[in-house]
Length: 324
Image (tube, rainbow, N blue to C red; front, side):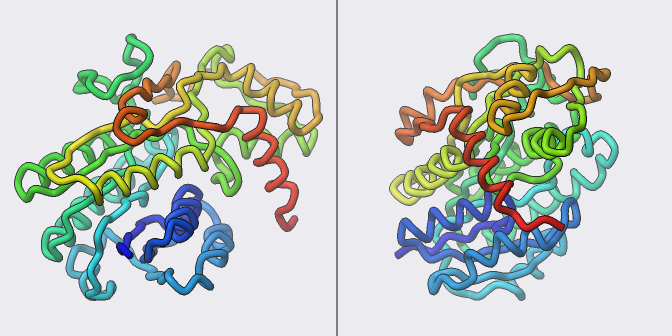
């Protein structure tokens, strides 16, 4: 059975991805650096569900150390596909720490690509972001849009730079690549800094919900298992195809305004939200809205989870977590 290397394996999307790939019968090598962006114990809890599996192995590794460090730390066993999910995420923090984002998302990705080149690994699934579309006026967002002037945060710029790097390696070294632009992924294990997780905690504590802007901004919220299904289908596509370079949207094709999201979260938690309106945050976009027709055509991708059901699952998971 093929071996898949997953970077960022202990994170929110990464841990779900590893579980899915293991369930599909792959051997999985997981890599994570336990970046202190949020508490290490949360990632260790994610990892604890993976470590007992006989076809999973884990390596704590910092990609920024360079391709030689990867070669020293990882086994020489064949790797069929790399799923590169590791990244420093978040728009607002990237405005405050642009160098950190470029080092983690551009320099580290270059080291990974070099390691792949030296090892002769020829297939890559690269996790990009809907942030690369910025405030592109035409909606829904299509993969063939010109994005040279679209990025309005260092995070977005770092992800578009990652896509450009994958094309460079495809052109120079015939690397098969599938770039996937994720759209506001949510669900069990979501990072505690993200809106849905934060809003649920605030409602449970009886505190007001901060609303940046007038509440009309909208996001294409995508349940994590729908995104992971797209990743798994992307891995299968890469294994079956040769001479591949494609970019796809993995979204839900249904933008939800912020006020409607807060209302739905209030219903899921059974608490009436109280709102605190604040200025827009620098780098935030007005809307994300995925055209998913290309992913449907190439992969058979089709999101299955409604917002109400996804929020129900998230709240059930959140309530089951140990309280500090």
